[in-house]
Length: 166
Ligand SMILES: [Mg+2]
Ligand SMILES: [Zn+2]
Image 1: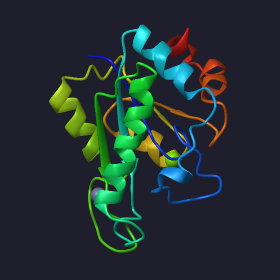
Image 2: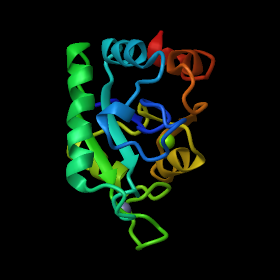
Image 3: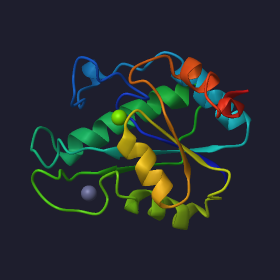
Image 4: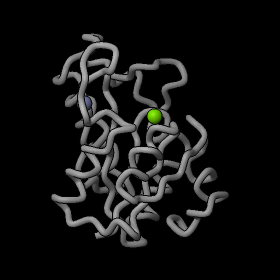
């Protein structure tokens, strides 16, 4: 299947005021997100979230906090008729421990590709950081770097990936 891979913090939700977002009260959707995701689904893309959550390694929050917030986010999307196929996250942080899943490493993307028979050619990764794009490019998936916490629809619309939301 064709997939739009999405980074979470800075793309889906704002991390302008809270670098580590793990509380429902701090979870604020960025502008244009619902509109963008709906249009991607309409255009036949599945949506998969790939997120670095190094705050777990740093013990700022734990896996339960992350999963609780993830469920909260999925509920918001479900109410808007947006189905997220899967959420993958890396709980490690390079300051604390080594791993091969934290972006710019590509293990989480590879897992998704294997599990969902992802068509590399027609899939795209959207992130707000170079490491999001690098992770995707490592396995031949095109990456789009958008401005953090900006209107996601506008960011995609002005890119060469405007077809995702056309
Ligand atoms: Mg980000
Ligand atoms: Zn990791």
